[in-house]
Image 1: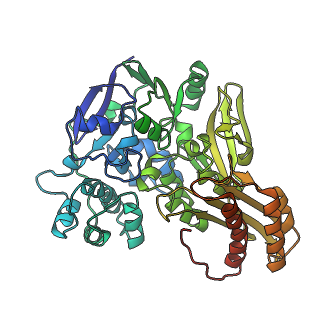
Image 2: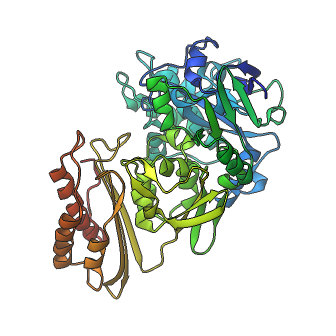
Length: 493
């Protein structure tokens, strides 16, 4: 078993001997002496530590092809860059990839994003500037490679994960507009070698920390059975917070990032099937405009950096009671597939959650995929996230609603809430209140009464039980207004 983690740093190959559970930020600011990457929150919120990760296009070809891209869009030896938070990324996750920091953007001249930021007076104290530059460089690279022009919404989405306390965002946005208007800008990296030479290794270990990287679902399941106490790591955007905050150790890690079956996206006439290691950014790209309300929610799902790294399976597997993914997907009627040594089994997503951080997942099992049924022409779906801030915040209440209507009468209903209790909850008695009725004032009133009977919300710093119950009841009224075509103000409450 090797002790070396192999990757490229700003174009130069690195063979690093270090514990795989060391955060990338710690290594950059320590051993690598690259101080341009800043430490702010150490939780993946402020974006000061943003870097770019380049992935071999072959590694993401399956997901891209299934979500609309074609093989002709892929250049041999090319790779794609995505902004991520280095404070919650581990060194093990760099194996086989290319890492670019703010120091690596400049070659013989400033990168266009750096130049535009300087020319436009887009920085004051400068602490947050490197992270902002890296986020916008990722966007500029996307625009350059796809030939698309980012609008203001996409620019603001890109910056949602970067906190700037002193400059203000207007000059930053103006700098971004300038670069995008000129066609974007690639991340020009002349590698001293090839990513083909550093394909992800099967495993590596150093100083008591071992990192496994299975390539197939069969290998993953076998390894899961062999090391049942190991940490199962997907994107690490949740687990990485505890690693950085509490300086905990990961002595045995199994990564799902390179498992082919878990990286697949499949679409047919009736559904989308996402492998558990598909990132939220890839989910967002794949679903397009099929679920407009879910698309809005996903754009509020963490930040671009989080969505580029966090996975659909990891979000479900952590079983967080405040996770936005679960209630939204339960409302759609999602099904989850679990794979283990005795084969695979499927179950409705709502049945996966048993209690606080407890699930149906057995010690020898992994989440293999999540399937979302497509909406039919007679179905309506909405999901609402109520939080103290619109961006970069956890839910106080998340409510998802899907109804099937024929001639104005509801024939089927699904309602799920998150942020209310130890697990996301589907309110089946409330659903039955809707069946056979039109969604009018009387039905909404009856539904509110049913919700009051069926839900027993918790109280915490995000909101009292009374407040949560009122919000949950009002969301069914908001849903009725939405379906009636009335304008409902979208805001954080």
